[in-house]
Image (cartoon, rainbow, N blue to C red; front, side, top):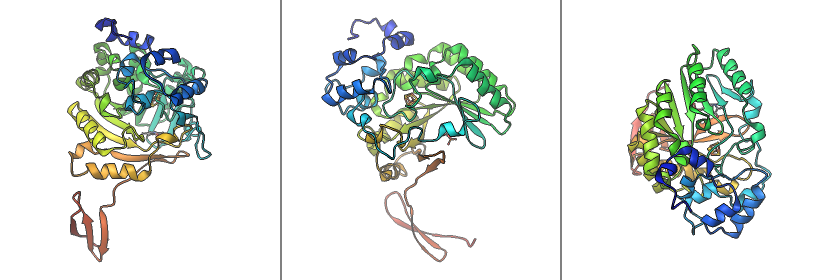
Length: 363
Ligand SMILES: *Cc1c(COP(=O)(O)O)cnc(C)c1O
Ligand code: SF4
């Protein structure tokens, strides 16, 4: 479909943005849709829009509906299934909003939603209820109110820009928001949660890197989920971010049939480390509406951690976390290494399954 597009246009993020796939006929020209995918596309229209950048779409396998890119970007039948345990706002983010667009749940840090658009709408998105919905977009006034709340709340040390995708803002808007946040005395660091390096890596231009370079300390959380996403374009985006002084960490979401496989996670994490991005979290998929078909048993995430720890660089081992429903916050799950206790003697198993005794001191 894009064979004749000149390279300069292909590499231009505004072209990528303007040529996103949003309609069924465009998608059908590109891949062989299954009956389930076609039905899910039609049914999901009023609820959670479809949008796929040409760059991300070109990574899809046209024949195989199990392709990890395709499953993340093209609606599947499971999206339409509703279960009674599913929640519209699984993390009760709306209940912890002291100002519109701010979720303040932990003592020292806040989520600050600055935009509701994303280049690609991930079918597993936990914020489907508002992401992609133009009527809930953060207005300029709302952003002002958020900045004001942060400035007058001295307990806030850490501000996490989220959305939607904050890199969908213009360079000027980002520059302004970052500058004003880091000018607040009690704000010690700012983080940006973004999927642009994965779905629209062209967005990370030298000009954007220059803007980010002006603000520090700045942490960038990416959202790579599968080795197929590890392209030269994505590598360049990470390189520009790291060279601009951003500290990079990846937040993967564990998705059934996409990346619930230790070998894929290991390959992904090794690639990330080579590109100066440290695996930070593996998220258990939330109890959000219409994403239950992506969920794995909790034991799966623990098995993956168990397969990584000891076998790969410790830096390749992220925390496996569940974000508890109702706003309980994140808790991490670990494999059970402590196998027995006998008086002061504690027996551990190591990564190879061998047993070792450790003498504990009295409390
Ligand atoms: C995840 C989250 C954060 C950041 O948590 P870290 O564990 O510090 O990365 C902050 N606020 C809210 C509401 C969150 O859900
Ligand atoms: S990039 Fe993030 S906020 Fe946007 S659709 Fe994907 S998961 Fe949701």
